[in-house]
Image 1 (tube, rainbow, N blue to C red):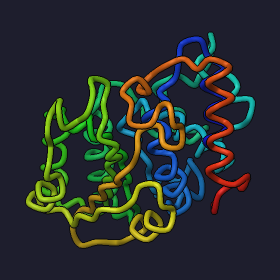
Image 2: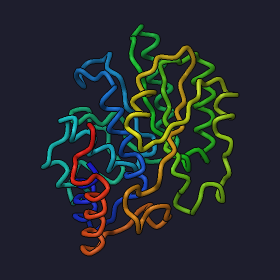
Image 3: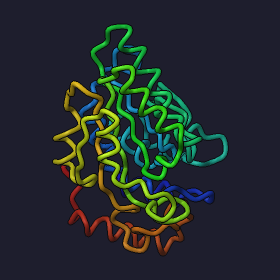
Length: 262
């Protein structure tokens, strides 16, 4: 997924959101491993909603691994006439549940989806991936309150806690700590995991809880690429051929030539 995402980032002159895509890569891969999605036509399917809409490198490559997107689809990323932009457009045929854009709208949309599924008596789960910078939006906290207020224990929220946003460290822009205590006080069953550990993620994602479930996934922005890690410039940027080759080599070394566990 990471190597494919680098190919996609290199192919576009518009640049790509490498930082937030690479911090969420393991999260998205594990979500599509645990979610029950027999068919996108099945109304009772689990939903995966990427609220941090700029994390599409993780979304598209996870859908590619799932078999919902093709090599040909990915090759059109951010080209003229494409269906696959730097913020996803809803496309159920390709597995995309939500049109990403203004931050905070994904979790707000999830409230309605989760409530509708509850009213229809579905035994499914609504997964929502948020960025920690996205938590600056007031609409997010309204949605977080609504989920608890309506008793939507069919919702699992995963916060990609990479601690950076476009303007710099989240602690400088808007210090949200302690996030765990805030979510617990709101009424969530809250857990913190290593967001780059497949084992830890798989251990908590499929969990059924009496309360709405919140997972804080500690991650690294642009994980695996030394010159972009923990660097706000990775939020969106254009890769030169030289930097692309360096990134590819570093990712290959990180995995010792292996393709990962999943």
